[in-house]
Image (cartoon, rainbow, N blue to C red; front, side, top):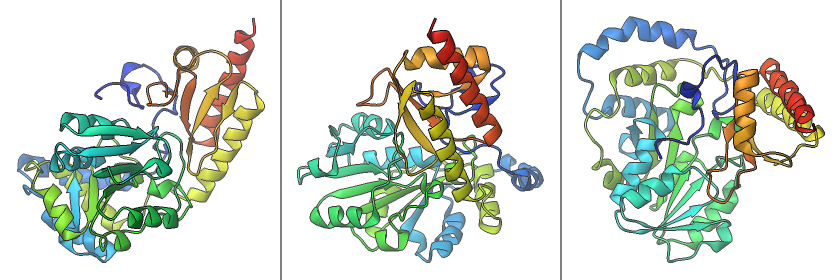
Length: 338
């Protein structure tokens, strides 16, 4: 899907607070900016056809082998490479979730089946796609539950997308364990971890044999020179996201404030973004109102499979910006009443 994702800020002017992206804003990226400024001349030459040196260095961080990691142009490229590597097979997708799993599978002639519970997964699936923490619900499937599921279906390949792994305190599936399992591919996103959605950098981790099957689908130079330089920088510098506990505490404050307005059902979450089901009005109308009247952007979540036109998704920002949203919703509630 080219259009219909969150963070469509390019369509609007003068947005003051962006809740539509699942990336936490207001991070100190000054060190990255300075580093890239000193390395900008790298764009005058081709990067490595495959970012092998970067892969080797990142592998050492996780104490895995270089052939157990594959850097990509964001996690989305990894999704499409996996779908291509398993051309024409049967994919089960745990819904509602990120649309690119289904789009990539259909592009590469998969038979796609949507399931809404892990109990619905059976041995007819060649591949199972699970986002964990899940976008858009924020739900985390416990590590032991996932491991039991994987062992129950030894002939099925499990793609576990942990792009939001840095935004939860729940225990997630571990890379060191996954690379020892012959049918698990994990997806990771430096884009999300370091809050750089405009600079695409992601990676897959899996066993050598499984990753070899996917890696051969990769185009040369898919990871650009500046993204590679950013990857080197991140190896030497602290994650700019700050304390996740603080972010999750602010998430709970925001959820309670919205719930108190009685205008919507606020869904539980294990991370910093969450679903809201409106009791009055439609998601598209609320998005339009907030953008035009308050310069606030939210995610209309009605195009997620399994959700309807009353769902929005909100990603927690700073307390000041969250207060802007709360006050705007109070005004919307008042105007809606007349």
